Image (spheres, rainbow, N blue to C red):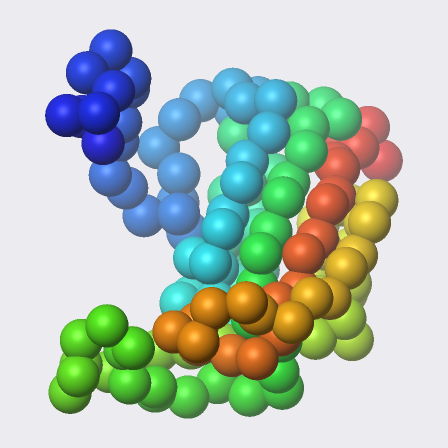
Length: 132
């Protein structure tokens, strides 16, 4: 990323505890990353997103649809396994709701790439109201 965008700012950190001040960002996009977070850390992760988002900030999630968590083989690296936590509308709505996120739009699409770690993607557009 630094080679392609040398003027960009990049940071590597734990998304369960984002190291930025409160109310820093207008939006967060978590594309195919939240499903690598163990179930017991999901609430902490969403709270971390909430803390760094400004009031009325946007959270955009792309998740893999399913109802389980398991180790799966990485499609591009034979013999390497990664943790996958699959999501459904039934478990995503309460997770976001308990942190005062409102789901603005919820879509489910078939995956178009044979190397994705699931057959359907959940796309969630949400916003946070911190005055609640």
